[in-house]
Length: 207
Image (cartoon, rainbow, N blue to C red; front, top):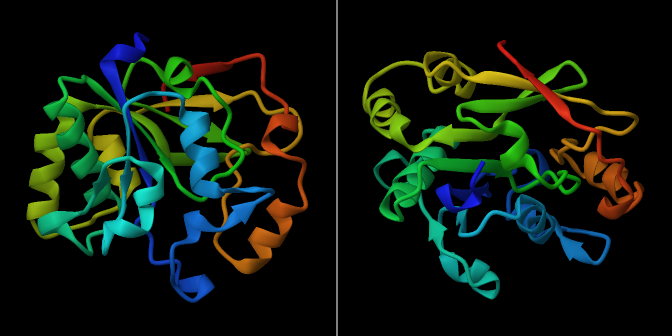
């Protein structure tokens, strides 16, 4: 896709309850924070950070920090909506998202996932938040968050006709994420992101 038509969003608003709270994406893997690694991997510019609370803790990144606003507490879809609205304000037609705790993301995701809507599958799992979203789904998402009912990302993905692109992984899963301190120790023991195999390509297919 033409990168000029897309913006990117790092989803950093999780509560990290299994790690005692705090800003999980600011934890380091190697010499860099996970957030820094994700921002670099996304490549798309402009990029924003989805996070609630005091935005000053992300000031060092020099990026917009988007809160969930009226939909605070409604899960990651609230962050996606804030990102879609921000991307629309910039005249973009697509939004690439990724969680801030996935330090081994491969580069080139926007091109591999185009056209939107499309998300990654790997190792038998669907990664609904590693996805390229069409900006014009914002009103549908706003309506969902404004009404009673499920806030499951998978459910909304199905409603907008999400495609699923299988990542041709060879050994290690580049979408490995950190939910616990045990996970953090495991990813810190892995080779650096530059040593992770990049697949020859992924084959998008209807899920």
